[in-house]
Amino acid sequence: MDKLDNLTEAFRQFNEERDWDQFHTPENLAKSISIEAAELLECFQWNNDFDKEHLCEELADVLSYCIMLADRLDVDIEEIVLDKLEKTKKKYPVELAKGSSTKYYDLKKRD
Image (cartoon, rainbow, N blue to C red; front, side):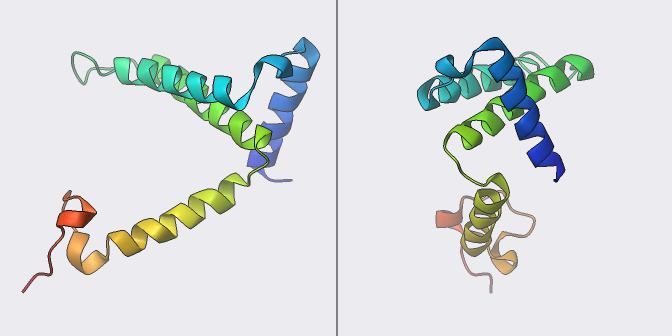
C-alpha cells in the first residue's frame, strides 16, 4: 500500500466513523475544493508574507477534498495526474516553452 492509498483509507475510515459519506457527493466535494482553494489563496491576499503553518493547513484541506473526490468517483489519482502531465508536455514542448510563461496557443517557433 502506498502513501496515497494510506491517505484514502484514512479518509474512508474518518468519514465512516462520523457517517459523513452521505454529505460527500461529487458536487459537494467539488464545491469544498473551490472554497478551500480560495482560503489557500487568501494566505497571499495582501502580500507574500504568509504564515506557513496556516498555509499548510489550507493546502491540506484542498488536497484532502481532492483525494475524497477521486475516491468517490473511483479514479486513480496517479493515473489522471500523469495522463494530464503527458498532455501538458505536448502543449508545452521544451524547445518552445522553456523559460516562458506564454500560454500554449501563443507559443511560436523560435528562429
